Length: 129
Image (cartoon, rainbow, N blue to C red; front, side, top):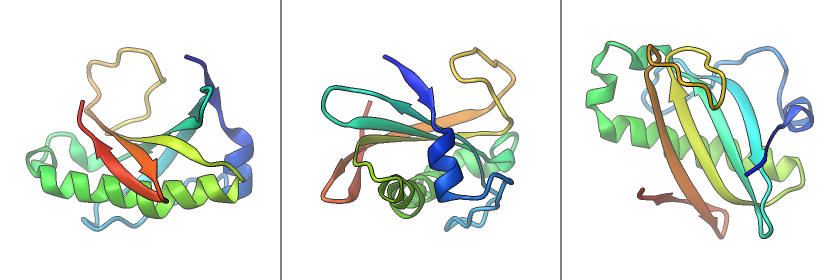
């Protein structure tokens, strides 16, 4: 697997300054980064979001709320960003963390949640692990 930071996509699709993103639950969400895993068929995109309210709160107890926010971000944020960059995704991974983390580095103090979605007909379909 090869992950490539997507600086160009971010520059094209959104301001560099962190922006608050609206989600159904109303919790504060900002984009940390976007990464691409190149594959033979279609690129897999990883959208990493900062969601400070998931640490030490009832948010983790409300799986329906988290899932609603994550599928919303996949459908309404990630897919338009990818399309604007001129690409088609095979899969989108949405991750939440209560603090900025380095990808691939264990951060035991961080609260993190992620979901994976396959993309069919411009629709995010949850993949059970």
